[in-house]
Every structure is written in C-alpha cells, then in structure tokens.
Image (cartoon, rainbow, N blue to C red; front, side, top):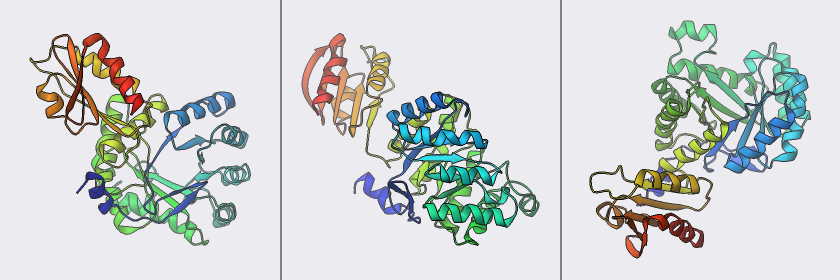
Length: 357
C-alpha cells in the first residue's frame, strides 16, 4: 500500500464548506494559510505582501481589519490576488458587515464577543446571504469565565467547549458554514484539543499552534503539533504562526504537508547527515539545492547524498539524486546511475535535469 493511500484511508470526513471558487473540508486537500503583518493602514504594502504570499504558494490570505477604515484593504487585496481573502475581526460586528459588503471571502470572528444576539443574527444573515463562511478561533487565552471555572483552566476539553459554544450561537440563526480553530501554545494540549474536536463535531478544522515563536522553535512546535494531527487524518487547513516573514510560514506549511505525506506538490529533499566518508561539501550543496528548488511545483523526491553508500542504494526511491565522491558526484535516477560530473558542475547538472523532468 502506498503512503498516500494510508493517509487517505484515515482522513476524517468533515463538512464541506465553500470558499470562493474552492472548498474546505469534505475530503478536499489541506490548504496552507498565512496572515499579513503589514500595518492595516498601509494598503500598498499589504497588497504587495499579499501578492508575494500568493507567489510563494499561500492558498488563503488573512488580513487584520481592526477598524472600519481598514475595510478598504479588502477590495485592494482581492483585485491583486486570486486566492481567498479572510477578514480577521474582533468585537465590532459593524466591521464584519462592512467586510461582507466589500466582497471578503471569509470572516474570522467569535460571535460570543460581539454583544447581543441581534448583532450575531445580523452577521449570520449577512454571511449566509453572501455565501461567506465564518471561522471561529479560540485559544487558551480567550476562554469564557464559565468554561474556565468548570474545568479549572484552559484544558483541551475547555477549548473545544468554547469553540462549540460560539458555533451554537451561529447555529441558532441557521448558519452552519463554520470552520473551527482551537489553538494553544502548549503543543500537547493543542493536539489533544483537536483530537477531541474531531470526535465531537464534523466542522472543518483549521490547525495551528498559537504564539508558536520564532523561526526555529515556532517551526519545531508547529511541525510536531500540526504534523501529528495530519498523520491522524485530522485537519483541513493549516497555518504555521511564526514571528518572522509570512513567506516563511507558507514554506514551512508546505513542507509540513509534504513531510506528513498529505501533499504531493513540490520538491521533497532527502539528504544524509554526512560522516567520515564524505569527500564533497555536502552541507553547502544540499543548502543550495533546497534554495534553488524552494518554489518548484514539480512533485519530485530529490536526494543529495554524501557518498555512494548513501547514494543510489539507500536513496533509490528518490526520483533523482546526486552522490558525492572525491571532488566529483554521481547523478542517479530511481537508483540507477546515469552520469558522473565534477563537484563544481553537479549542481547545475542536477537543476538542468530537473527542468527536463
């Protein structure tokens, strides 16, 4: 059985939610999100970053809309990119209504935070009439007092109860195009909360570790948290939240999908850790290969190995690869050697060969 078939058989079948010209859940592929970090008042800068994110492979863009004036971001961004745009809104239901009127594709808001039921009803009706889904996002720092009292703290079940509480407020007004995110900065709690949610609701789940940190630790925590859930067949969209350039979030998200066996698009790099047999500058070479192929959309497994022991033999499942020698390297495909080249030429030979594949 192929690895992709293994994961396909374990996928949680969530409710299908339409988002612009695509869908979330319902067995559709997992998508990668990111969020703009340019100040909302800087429309030109926000548009520029949105375009860069789309080029990097971002599939859903979220933008903070902190006030009514910031709503002008929505048409500006939508005119510049083809992917769905999400308005991130807190507390003020009027911003949600104006965002819907401005043509946003999705709203991120917690209905329990916008006041009286009439406001929730108004937002629910506006979104339903426009065919716009709502993402509810809870985290360990935003739980309601009664839920914290019931569980004695932000436990995994407390997080799930909070998310379902907000969902029920929308369901009361016949709105069910809902996506849930249930995040914690504590990775084991985040994993447990999403597993509980997967058992208790069929709403699509947006995965993420909140306040994950800088590029190094944020990526590690996200890989463990998001990756574990993806391997369980849980998750419909993901975001790797980093204190870094959002483009790093997108690349990290795509890499996590590949590592978990969920995504096929893009290059997967295999490289050995080097040892005393290595007679080529493998560390530099592997880094260059990764950089050059970062935006390659071809579904390929590329091996960069230090010697013949780890080359065509151990990396025979790679679509293409190189194995170092003394100032030279072998080029191989599917375990079969197809050529030998000087060390200073092998990188370009490999890239040219990949271009032809």
